[in-house]
Each structure stands twice: as structure tokens, then as C-alpha cells.
Length: 256
Image (spheres, rainbow, N blue to C red):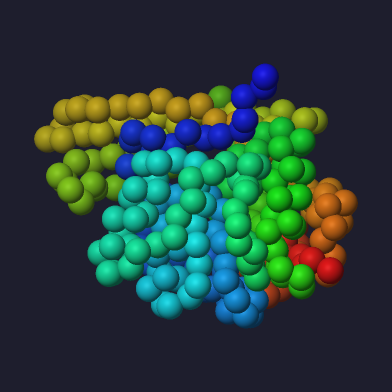
């Protein structure tokens, strides 16, 4: 049996996840919050991770639940929420195996996390499950990107992020190397984590991930195929239609 697509966030990759994003407000925070409020009901965040968006939304009294496959990421999310006196509703599942007793007004997938699904059959299965977990007239909102900038930097290690770990003052560097198959629309990503303290390397970790990207009309057809309609595509978390100048496309669609 073929293994399910998953990025296996654990160890340093889970502990360092928040270093990718800096501090609030995040670039996508207001956009998804508007969508949840406009949806007028409960929401489910797919691949909620450490609660980067989920915890602020709960703090702002929105009815949002979270789903992720990583127990370590969910533990971090729960700890963050408890710091605000909030007990989040969290589900440990793969998005392509989504099976919950509740239906939602909004399901959203931020930060290109849908692209973790490297196999097309899994991508379609996830979309079908999103559709079946939405109320009539409910909306799905999915952020996607095409890694255009990586095409000219293939097979090169580059520093993506440096930050100081709050718990012990250690300096953490995150390096990335990529290789893309433009025909199959698949990318292999290698991540290297290095932890330094007092100028000495004290810890490190390597990760390899697979990512699939989609183009605008391709993904619109996928949404239509599983039963979504009223499809809109926004650029870079604005209310403007996506163009080739935008780095990210955010697809919003509804059930009939």
C-alpha cells in the first residue's frame, strides 16, 4: 500500500515551525478572519499546526476548530491556547482522511498546506471530504502558490530563516534546497535545521518533503469536479482578483 502524503512535523521541524512567520499580525490573518466572519458559522482550519492562526481567532471569540496530523504541533497549539485560558477543539487526522461528526460553514487551508498532498488522487479525496463536511452554501478557502522563484535556484542551499529561541537563547538557522519537476508540477524540498549556542553547533536535523503545485484554471476545474461552484481567486490575501504579479492565489468556493 502506498504511503499517505504527509510532512511529518516532529522534533526541530515542529519546535521551529513558528520561526517562519515572525510576529502578529500575519500576512494572511485578516483575510481568513474576514472569511470566517462572513461565513456566519463554525469553521475548521486544516493543517492548523502550532495554532499560528487558530489561537488568535479563538482569542477573538471565533468558533474555529483545528485539524493536523502532527501530535507535536497540536501539543504546541494546545499549550499556546491554554496561555489565553482557552481549550481548543483539535483533531489529529490527515486532511485526505478527514472524518468528523460536525459540518462547518467554512473550511480553510492556509499557507499552501494543501500542496503537501503530493498525489493527485489524495488531493481530490481531500476536496471531496471538505465538500462533505460543509453546510449547504458553506465555503472552502485554500491558499496555493507556484514556486516560480525556486526554478532558478535549484540544488542550492540557501538560508531561509534565522531566529533566537526564546526558551534558551539558542540561535537557529533554517536552510532550504529545492528541485522541481516542471512537467509533473512536483517539488522536492530539503530542509536543514542548525541550532547554535555560544557559537557552537549543539543540534541539527534534516527533512525531505514533497510538494505539488497547481495553476489557476487547473485548480478551478478540480473544485468544480467535486461539486463546488461560485469560485473566486484572490491575490496575496487581498480582495483583488489574482494576477501573474501575485505570489499566492487564494481560492474561495461554495457548496450548492
